[in-house]
Length: 270
View 1 (cartoon, rainbow, N blue to C red):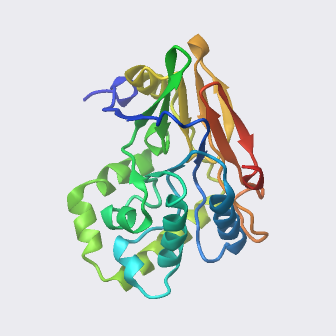
View 2 (cartoon, one colour; view 1 turned 45 degrees about the vertical axis):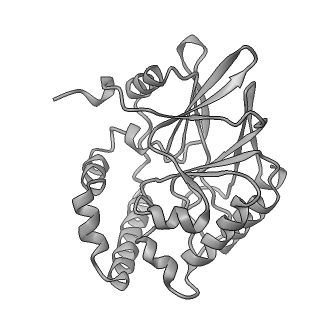
């Protein structure tokens, strides 16, 4: 059996448009009706950002139980899709699934006007006489120490498993999603920490992509990690702005990239 830490993945490639000067990256908003302040901050950000493109690296939603939720009149999913569709008319929006919204499919992309991204994808960006290569990932596949989750991830990404789940009535899937959220909250309350990205696997992925930067979310541990040879692992922030949430400090952040570097901005300044 191959060691995942040293096994190079298949890396998709996206060429930045010639006119892009700034690109925003967000992830781990965990949008849900019970956190209206976070939802409103996200809506406001999409309406006013000055970025040339926006990349959403997974866990946009706390849970996604299937694209048919978009057809339920007045559903939270349908309302969010309208917000995304309006934003996609102003600038390109790209979406990579995370561990909470991996069931988002082609109908979701069509309804929102977003472009789907494979996991992982390298963004190739002209930089002077050369180019900047930025590897984008949700980050969950890199967290090998979370053995239980990695087992579930392997199962849940199979077409057979997804077909079986999506064959259940929407109401049943919503109940399953609610139960999964409850289990997640119990893990948080028990003090179970988020696993961090495996260092060797991160290097393997970056080598395969010939990337100078690796940008990912998932861990809820925003930080800039210097690596060998002038490379960086950059972790995006999660968003939580509602006073009654229980997942760490209230925060929200946009990672703004340029070919020259990056900065972390509050959504209202992006």
